[in-house]
Length: 517
Image: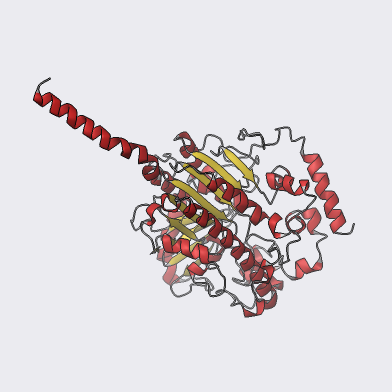
């Protein structure tokens, strides 16, 4: 071999030696761990990081300091399951057809967990997912579930756990199941669902979910490629913190949130009286609900801190992309209302969104970009150097572009929203023939409807055209398939649901005992 050939071989060997360590390290740099923290029914301004003067959320606030805090983040649909399906798939509800809490995400629809799993990630979900069927395969290898509403509570791991201990989540059943709600104690009605949990803290859903999430994070390998989605049931009603969390806030010292009015506006009452009668809400009962709502938020925050500490102890915090967000908000006093189910005002459709990027790049930034939760699916795929499905219609939040001019939302088939930075149009009715229009700069609390104002017609017409272009033609029919493919795992009940009669009878007996029947 001549000298030139020897030099070429030597150079190739040197380059190979240099490249090999980089290649081995690729999973941690190019394929980060991903932790999605998803809570239920959290109003955006009920976190310290979003300016709330009373609620204590030091760990979520620190996450915001380490990442990007989005101040104009919206859900695609302010109901649990439809919103979750939009987050997973990057599609609006009229595109994925999961119109309500009993619907199914069709198996052929791509989701970010499916993209991650196909790329070799270990994918897992812990907590509330709210699927039909309960263990629907949306891309998670494993699912340890704690459900709340609907038949999922008769299938999940958490309620089997309670049954093994001889316990019952009485407050939750009274709030969520009609046959028990009609027998709820008067205290439940007087306090708008704000009651102390009958469960000790170690067995409360927040703690159970957090413990299993911690166990998962502590098992993560150092080379990346792990995806965990954690779904907390709270702060969704009932507002039932366990002791001692229920003592954390003095109702009389709380500041009522922006948007409270002394009565419920007539057009809001006409749309719906509320899960609790909104017109009977008082300042005193609202403060009590806020105190327990904040307590459940602080309990979640405590466990977010435990997860952050576990990642730091394992040296994985800087190599993990962390998302904190919610499926929808809560009026919590806005327009004299509580919970959800009325007009798509900002406290209902605006959701907190914090993204902590690997290596804390962009740390401490605040973005006013108009964001939808359909953006998370393509964003997470791109962040892991994976290719999102072409059917994921959201934007990549990893880019620092101005983003969209209009953000859209729908609530049921007969209410839609188009919102810019300065204005909001809500159309209602079977033909979307009714409207609310707000100048958010002059009227941020959405109290003065300008739909008939001559000066507003140009912008109303522009946003109306945008809404019809966004949701054209006939709407999709609700898709539901209780026999859709579920994950294969020993903890998944048999498809025949032979287990349900026994667990339902157990809870029925326990509830009769606790309610004195």
